[in-house]
Amino acid sequence: MDDNRNDSDDEELETIAIFAGSVFYFTEFDPLFQEHLPCWSSSLTGHKYITDLIKGNPAKTMAILRMQKGVFVDLCNELTTKYGLVTTRELGAKEIVAIFVYIVAQGVGNRTMQDRFQHSGETIHRHFHNVLESLYRMSKDIIKPRDPEFKDIPKKIYDDQRYWPFFRDCIGAIDGTHIPAVIPQDARVPYIGRKGVTTQNVMVVCDFDMLFTFVCAGWEGSAHDSRIFHEILGNDNNNFPQPPQGKYYLVDAGYPNQRGYLAPYKGQRYHLEVFQNGQEPQGPREAFNRAHSSLRSVIERTFGVLKKKWLILSRMPSYSFETQVKIVVACMALHNFVRLHKLEDEDFTTYNDESVNVNATYGYANEVDVGVLEDIEMTTLRDMIAAELFEI
Image: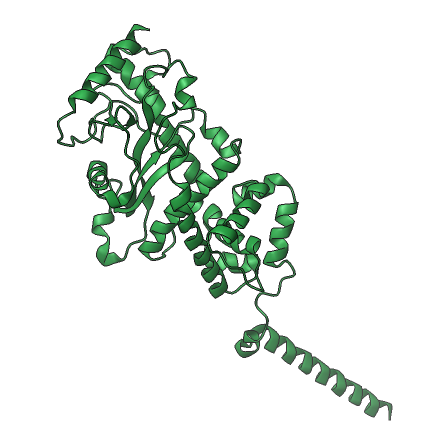
């Protein structure tokens, strides 16, 4: 009888083992079973993550969102009250805006965001584009001169003896920057720039507070800066902030020296690095070029802040080209929003130092000849400033 009971017990244990093995197999390996498992079931939801982030250490908020928590909250309020951002029952404004800001700040893709915020790819995609459109609308109000008549002398110039009174009529700087672009294979050629990669060429104006006052994005990477410059100035629909009579922007040697736009002397030492280690300018033209380069470096440093904050500009995903162009403009709108709300932002503080090398260009002002005769008025002004600078 004991033998029969032992046999029964063995059979029962064997049945349990088979059942347990079957459960393990189906839960671990069976695709049909796996499909029914909840995908985004983490207890750390997107809402909880953002709430903890905003309430937590300010350094972490700055590292993740590239802005201080108060600025982020103001941004959410601004987009929902003025620029048409709509919330849902499932997602509030802070989570929706954080999805966009996280993507552009960290340069990550949709799959990473699905896990971080515990939402489907469709939800991430939809809200990213909703915020993008709101920021694009904001850009028309925030990327423009604060003083449209340019009546005030910039504090940067007035307070610095290197520039005052020589550049008292200067109102800002103009330059172009190349942003990586993802282009279909059959349309790549016009977008291949000098470095052999596909880019969009973006022409920008900034003031001396490192604020963008104009942007025109979406040009092919092969387009020369001077061509873009002339196309923009020749089209009133671009709303370019034209310099008033007697005022001017600083431009580099790739642009014409014409009324309202002051370029350096070509064929002369120009970039700040060549004047380091006690090397003084040899003559008025080099004295002018050194001062011009130093003052115009504000736009290079502004680009430095922009690209440090928003890593997506160095890792552009394969969105449509129209969306890529809007992302560039939206990041510049974010840049201005942060700057206007928090002047002591750590990224701006770092790049406010002129010794920060954000441009690896060295040597002489010898850009491509733009084929335009120099304006007599601007040439005379340049010669006058050069002589005054060399005398001091």
